Amino acid sequence: MQVHQTCCRAAFGLLVASLLTSCAAVSEYMENGFKVGPTYSRPLVPVADDWIDGENAALEGSSSDLAEWWTVFEDETLNRLVQDAYDQSLTIRTAGLRVMEARAQRRIAAGSIFPQGQEAIGSLQHFQLSEQVSNQAYADKHFSQWNLGGGLFWELDFWGRFRRAIEAADANVDASIEDYDHALVLLIAEVAGTYIEYRTFEQQLVYARENIVTQEESVRVARLQREAGRENSEIDLPMSLSNLRRSEAIIPALQTALRVAQNRLCILLGEPPHLLQELLDATQSIPSPSPSVVLGVPADLVRRRPDVRRAERELAAQSAQIGIAVSDLLPQISVTGSIFVDANQFADMFGGRALSGAVGPDIHWNILNYGRIVNNIDVQDLRFEQLVNEYQQSTLKAAEEAENAVVQFLNSKNEVDRLALSAEEAGNARDVVLEKYTTGKIGFTAVFILESLVLEQQNALALAQGRQANSLVQVYKALGGGWELRLNRAELVTDQVPEVPIEPEEIDQP
Image (cartoon, rainbow, N blue to C red; front, top):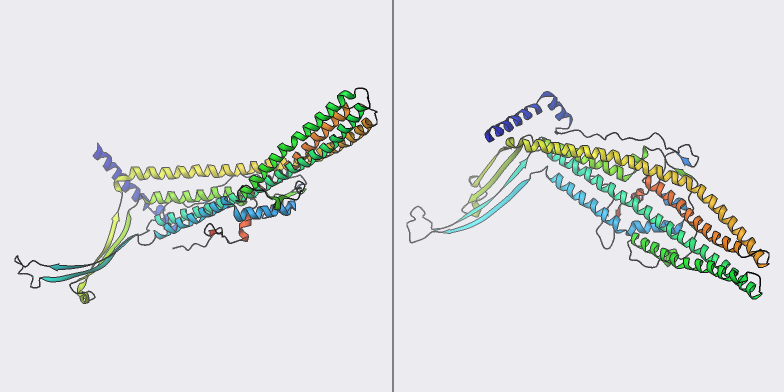
């Protein structure tokens, strides 16, 4: 039974080989540049014709330049933070080192084109024959043997196996660069988002302190009213103190949030947590987003987002792996050779009579392993199909993230506008009732309610302004903006790590 299975495998192997040498296979083989396996082409991906809110006046469909999108906030501190993060981030350095690793792997693959095995041998042996036994054949009992030579083994890339490996390595280099770009997109968005969060907490702190000043005045008036013996004044002072203590309690929580955001910025900058007074000392307002955003068209996501491009490059690398697997079906054709010189005297080594050598072809064919080889082809093909689905899924996810960010950006403006009006009206009402309470025209209940409402509305306004600014950050992040920052510099050099190339290098084809 085992012999029968072995014969069947051998027959199947011969059948496959004969099919590969058919006219159609030969034609495809030549069109592929004398390489077996599929010719890679980028799969189609589902892309919408336009954005869901494409008719909104705040969205522009023209071609967009997102190279330095954070500058739309016109905030010099943010600009400096982004640049410092790019210069110092350990995450970016790690991604850059992965690019270097992929390029080294590519050079290893390129080396397979050339002779894979080489050796050089040299020896000197001195012989002394025994005088106590019969050695009549050797007149000279003392002589030397000089030997020098070398050999090589060269598997010819007849079916394109090594060239497919180079294709896969090239695609992996591209994927590593896209991974670097994706890390840069995420870093810039996180720096901007954390900075906006910091300014939001800072604005809430400003509102809290302003309300404390107003509420301290209410406490002063309530104390005077009680001293004057005004009716029901005995409950006014506790109520006013309750508002004041609640506002004061907000301060430590906001200070903690500020420190946490500041520490996060330090880590993003590649620095240990420390105070950033020099950079964040001046109290500034929450960055104000631009009233409109240039989106381009949904199809731009496929071209612009590094994570989508990375998925496509991984797909191209896997396509080349199929060709490598197919090449195992065919015989491996090699050339082996050796050359040696042998002589008893060193001076005689370079004469023609000392020369010897051999050269010839070598054919290795895994005829009896076709079950394993064919199944490996299936494995590589199924991995390719999985990556096709992942690539298409990445484009859908990119579109989802972009649409979600866009609708948040559009609606956040209405939220901020209405909360700003609400906070303003609440403040006006508080001032009126506080004046009337001071003159004894009304009780303290209205003051108590409106003081609480003002603080609540101002906090809501600050949070909404932060969400509005961050929604624009998320739009640019979803569009894949910011990776172009690396194009301004050919390399990243530091005192702690070696040069990290971030530009696609020219790769010589062997």
